[in-house]
Every structure is written in C-alpha cells, then in structure tokens.
Image (tube, rainbow, N blue to C red; front, side, top):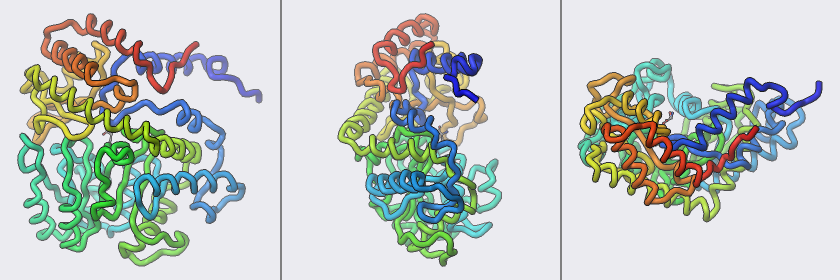
Length: 432
Ligand code: DSN
C-alpha cells in the first residue's frame, strides 16, 4: 500500500476538514472550554506514535518495543509534575470524564459518598449528575452558591453537609462557575471529616499553569484532575495529578493518602482503560512545554483581562451575568432576563452571526437543559488569536446587538469575518 495525502486519498473527508478549518478561522469561538492547539501540538498528535500499544507505565509495560514510548510518557509526566508542583502525574486518562471516574474508583468503594458542586450552580456532569454512571455507583451530595449575585460558595452549607454525610471525597471544580474557590477552606473542611480533597480544574488548568490563578495542590488538595485541551491548549486528553508517594503499580497498595499516586495509576490501567494513546501523550508533552514559557504566562494573564473586558461591556449594555461578572475566563449570560429568549435561541442567532458559544443552565434553572435560561462564553480562543480588550468590547456589542434584535446576524457576520481574518487561527488554515 502506498500512503497518500488526505485530499488525494479521501477527498470527501478532506472537504469536511476544510469546512471546519474555514469555520474556525472565519468565526469567533467563545465556547470557554475550547481553544486552538498549536501546529506543534497538532503535528505530534498526527504522528506514527498512534501505532504503538503501551499498556502499563514507563519501565513496566506488557508489550515490547517501548524504548521511545517510555521516554515520551516519562517526559510528559516530568513536565506535568514541574508545571503543577505535584509528586505524581498520570497522562494516560483518555478524557476528563475518564480521569474523574478513575480517581473515584481509586479511592471509593461502591456506594461511598462524594460532596460536589451542584451542576446548575456551575459543577460538572461527571460530578454526580443523576444521569451519569458515577451517580449510580456512588452517592453524590451537592453544595451550592450562597448568593448567585456574588457567586460566593455557601461554605457554611458545605461544612454542614460534610459533617452530616461524612463524604470520602470533597470535590471542588466546575464547568460554568465564573468565580474563584477558596481552596484552603475547602481542603480544611475535607481534612476535618477525613475526606480526600479532589479538584477538577479542567477549565482553568492553563490559568494555573500560567500562574494567573492559584493551584489547589498548593492549598491542601490531594488530587487534581484536568483535561489538556481547554485553557491548557493541548490535545484532547486528560491528566490526574497527585500528592503522595509513587509506588509500584503492579501491586495493590493500602488506601492511604500517601498511596494515591499508585492507586490512581492502577485505577486508570488496568482498572478503567486499556492501552494509552501515545500520540496524544506526545502532544500533551509538547503542550506542557509550551505552557511552561513566559509567553504562556502572558497569554493566561490576557485571558483574564479579556474576560473582564467582555463581561464589563456585556453588563454595560444591559446583559445580566450570573454572579455579575467573572474572575476567570468564562461567564454565564442570563438570556431570559437579558433578552427574554432562551439560551438555545441565542446560541442559534449568534451562530448565524459567526459567533459560537453554548447554551447553559443557570442556577436552579426552571427551564430544561436543551432550552435553558442562559449561554456560557469565554475568552481562551479569542485570546489565542491575539485579540485584546478593544476587540472584547466589539464582540460584546455584536452579541448585545444580535441577541437583542438590533442588528441582522448576516450583516454582523461580515464584520466578524473581517475581524477574524486579521487574527488568524494559531492552528492554521487547511488549504486545498
Ligand atoms: N465539555 C466541557 C465543557 O464544555 O465544559 C467539559 O465537559
């Protein structure tokens, strides 16, 4: 067989790829969990590392031929440990959901209790939403914000629930919470009830790596899970980072906090997964190297400045934001109060204008998840394109004009396209 390049080998697939490339280049990506991976990350992802099976961990594999896979996985692990200041990292989880499940299964017995943030108050589906497998396997109790106008977590409720239910894990983490958490306080509550403190930092891992936000592992947390493709700007993938003493994953250790690294390694493989995706691990190594540079720190600082500028202008123009602002890269715009239209309608009309974001539930939302009361948006992708505060003002104006019915989406789409063409996607453009 002769290998051929994609346009020649499969024109139908190539045409789809070109379409997506044009969409990513000519439109504004405001989904806060998305980003543009660098050409180096994309290159690593598309290499022949995809061919290799590597069950096990570096130095302890079940198949031969691991001299290079061992090197690349060890490099990714060392880079992750350095960047996030932890004792151990596994870079094998296939996704954020798989990573969270692995940590649950490493530490919990079936039926054990986890205390986590309520989904509609900003938590994540994998933190025990009733429709998930995890919710069938474990008993999730939920804490909420005390005041949705400020976003302050109800730490009194969190502590009372912890004392009442004696969870084995106290989980901090979110996918639509725009404020900061008091990690030391949460870790203190976990310690008080003998629970493990786990942080799911998928959304803000890049902001932590870039030192724009604090690291929960430096404030009493034992484990941090994250995806690698959001603010961290790597490939689709995940990691579990932990404090403790790494041991031999071929032997089952006692369930102690010190043994968490080994327990997690074993939970990932053979507990939850088979062979790791070595091409992805290679791309994670590249992304971690990129994230350790001064340029990346500047990038993450700018994400926060841009989010503040976008939020400020949306509110100035009459938009109602949940918690009335943001401390991180994202915000939730309450569309029923702002425009008397649900989040699905606003997502659709903005997509016609070339602005992509996602519908999102609001705290204790009376509307269903498919037509919720809000949309979620953020600045990681537009900041990767080099856009700054003036562009955020313009983007906020387009959103308010189109969502408020003051401008035709098709007309705004041309203006959006013109702005985007002056700020090309860092992932490049797939040309014929
Ligand atoms: N899908 C990701 C997000 O958008 O937040 C995490 O599940």
